[in-house]
Amino acid sequence: MIRSMRWLTILVAVMAVMIIWTTMGAAAQQPELLPVVEEEPEPPAMLPAVTDGLVAWYPLNDGEGRVARDRSGEDVAPNLLVTPETAWEEDGPGLTFDNDQARAYSEEPPRQLIERLAESKAFSFEVWLAPDGLEQGGPARIVTISDGTSRRNITIGHGEHRQPGPDLYLRLRTTRTDANGMPNIVAPDTIIEQPAQYVVTYTENLLVTVYRDGKLVYRGAREGSLNWDTGYQLAFGAEPDGERNWRGRLYRVGIYDRELTAEEVERNYKHWTTDEEPEEEE
Image 1 (cartoon, rainbow, N blue to C red):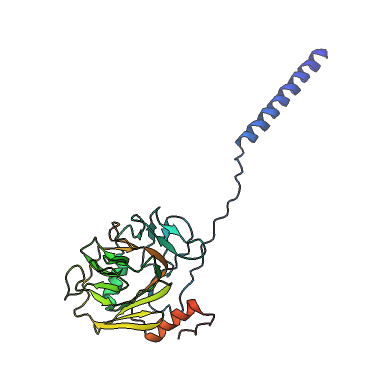
Image 2 (cartoon, rainbow, N blue to C red; image 1 turned 60 degrees about the horizontal axis):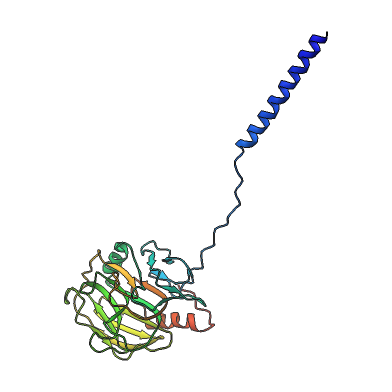
């Protein structure tokens, strides 16, 4: 009897040890609970009043990081890489270009965007900006689709190489120009120091039109048809390789695959400068 009680005691002790080991092992195998990290919500798209034909839209309201996102929703235009030397505006949307390394550019050529614009035979570029001084030249690149300083599809620039000033320079490549989009198209005394809207349109009837703050400032002809190269990159503030820097602030950039009418240009202008509600597009 005593021997049986002894074995029973030993058996209970062994079972107790096994239960403890099992419990400890199970606890050790429990995965560590990580804190739930909520993703930062994307900033709003802040679309312009006119969205028909909008194939690229950079509201430049990301606020931080090294990417300026296309928010058009068309999946045609690329997101742009922002160099570390380029600062985001602190009090609202925008990028500041104030040194030789500042720029935003597409890592790869935006082939779909270029093809869309070339096939449509018409386009509009809307750029909101404020220069850091009017005496710039090169022309200094504000927005460009190009490959270095001597080959491009289009460049919206500031000032002339030998005579810096407030002129808006446009280089637009067609079958009747050279590979650099020359001769230049010049809208004299167009760029002002204050933040302003600039719109450049091109139509199949070969007309180039420039608006500032909703008002016509230039109209002229550009002969030839678009023969754009799909291997060029999109860049803001300089050439994609960093040449021909522009100094100033970009607040938003939109690209359309059609000509905006004068009324639409004015609607977009009022959309950002007044409290009026834009009319619904039909």
